[in-house]
Length: 119
Image 1 (tube, rainbow, N blue to C red):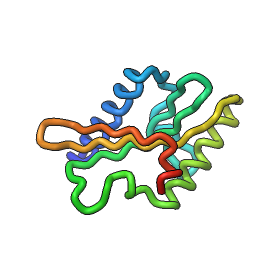
Image 2: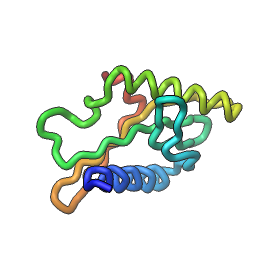
Image 3: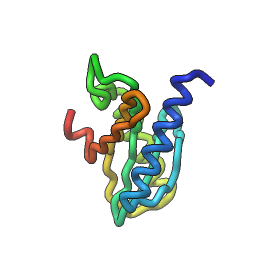
Image 4: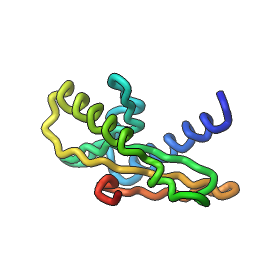
């Protein structure tokens, strides 16, 4: 596995740990449907958070959250819809982004709730 893949998995675990500390319940990791994949599906109360995790060692060129394309957003929406319907859930769905920025040996974590409204 390449270093960037290892860092991506490490970032996802940091995001899971962060959400658990904030009182979320983990429902699923790396949920796939057709061409879409959701990194983390977590729930807090009656809100289902569909979370895209973005990890980087530099935020120099473009803020991490802005690297999510319209195509990726569409795939996340389609995949989330499949998850909710197939699990017969009655929840509000929110699309979040958690960014992990690695500076030397420290990590900065930012949780953007309802992130698609910020684009």
